[in-house]
Amino acid sequence: MHWIDYLIFGLYLAGMLSIGFYFMRKNQSADDYFVGGRKMSSFHIGLSVVATDVGGGFSIGLGGLGFIMGLSGTWLLFTGLIGAWLSAVLLIPKVSKMAAKHHFLSFPQFLKQLFNGRVAIIAGVISAIGYLGFTSSQILAGAKLASATFPNISIQNALILMGIIAVVYTSVGGMKAVIYTDTFQWILLMGGLVFVGLPVCYIGIGGYETLRATLPQSFFSLTAISWQQIVNWIITIVPIWFIGMTLYQRIYAAGDKKTAQRAWFVAGLFEYPVMAFTGVILGLFAKAAFENGIIGVGENGVFDPEMGLPLLLKSILPIGLTGLILSAYFSAIMSTADSCLMAASGNLITDIFNMHHSGKVMLLSQGTTLFLGITALLVAWKVPNVLELMLHSYSFMVSGLFVPVLAGIFLKRRSSRGALWSMLVGGTVTLFLILSGAKLPFGLDANIYGIVLAGMTYLLFHFSETRRLTLKSSLEFSASSWLQGKDEDPRQGK
Image (cartoon, rainbow, N blue to C red):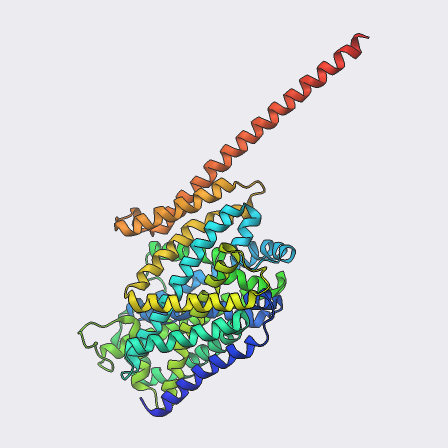
């Protein structure tokens, strides 16, 4: 790569740091630090939501799906559209109303209001561990991408560079820094891919004729996918819109229902069709480039489909544009890492240690975020399979937390015991099924079975408690009627 590309990438990183330090001076309270002062606009929140949700995993993963299966891979982010709009209609009205009254800072505080403190603490621990793993995996993903595309940078040095930048601007600037950097990073990602990546790659591989001549017909179809795959994507992606701490923080940051709903509608449209087709089509281009020898296999003779698009961009982009596009990819990774780090910090400060009312909350929040960021960096450094750990923690979160949220939305009478045990049963069953490697019926994801069992567990406690309360009320009524009758008998005798 040319020094101009390195300069552009360096300026991008410096810009992220400057935004963090700018908002360090603006933050005065826990509301400022964790939920952006509750006055953020729908535009910034919407772009931050989609940047966080799509992030590095989806933006790079979509290219991998396009490389492997073609246009059918776009169904992955169609589930994101469904999740965004369902949560906008079903979840946000209830959460916004309660948040305005109780000034929530975290997702478990919402569960505490619905159930009790024990449910909230367990949810806080699950969420904190999950998002710490997410942060580590995103930093590691960025380091691997940097090492593959910048040959002079080792994966260890890339880890240090990516980790320090993301951790510092997040810890000093808080949620305002995260949302504004996410806005910039999403614009950079979409602008780079749509206006530079698509046309340059299209010309570089030889255009439509080359695509048709090189790739199977199934790559151009939206139906070359099994129903099981679509169901698995729905059950693993839609629930996160209801239980993600990063999303609750942005609902609170919106300040009111309508602002949050507009942000969610914007985010859904950016996920599908905009990002879905952009990422997958670029993956198609990478597949054609690989088949025609424009990009080759790695040093170990094995080609990673998810690296196809970054390597194609590196191979055909002119000086200057390479640095821009690679900055765009790194921005996708950083926008997810910073949000996950803020979520884990919020869980620790508000839900586990209950320190958000301290007079030194700003210093405590910044110190906690910095500590968790360093921890995530060390985990990424020491645990090469951190992505596997992240997926396990993600599965535990989805299977454990989804059912209590649904109960809170749709049921007037709620069971705290049912919520607690459904969290433990759902998450544990899903982890067991994943770790056991068992072949599941119909080829469905382990999350489906975990959520079903969590739902059954909750309903068992719910109906048991409802029946007990009904019986208790009936006995009390009978006793009251009997006593009232005894009191009346003497008077009637007179």
